[in-house]
Every structure is written in C-alpha cells, then in structure tokens.
Length: 80
Image 1 (tube, rainbow, N blue to C red):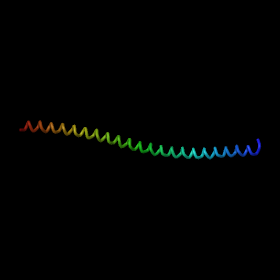
Image 2 (spheres, one colour):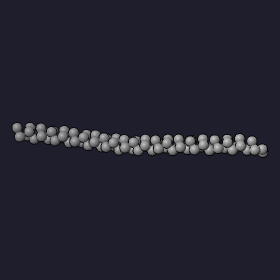
Image 3 (cartoon, helix red, strand yellow):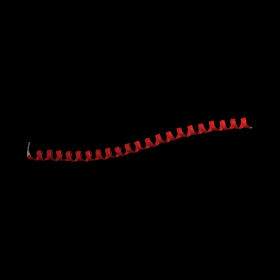
C-alpha cells in the first residue's frame, strides 16, 4: 500500500471514529430523555393510583352516608 492510500484509509477511519462519537453522544442524549420520560410516567402512574383510591374511598363514603340516611329515616318513622 502506498503512502497516499494509507493516508486516505486513515482519514476514512478517523472520520468513522468521529461519526461514532457523535452517534454515541446522541444515543446518550436520547437515553437521558427516555429516562426523564420514564420518571414522569412513573410519577403520573402514582397520581393515577392515588386518584383511583380517592374515587373508591369517596364511593364508599357516599354509600355509607346513604345507609345512615336510611337508618335515620327509619328511626324517625318509628319515633313519629
């Protein structure tokens, strides 16, 4: 291989290395963004679970209030 050919090959290999570095840097940025998105999704899932629990609790409270109102009505009928 002559010197000119070696220089061309070395230049190409050098450019490939630079391109690999840029690609790796971009992958790291994308990974960081995915990590942030995943954290936000986890946070949102906790909020959703809390809302579901609140909804279920409110449903139980309303049911209990209805039961107590019926008992009060029955007691009022008995004492009237």
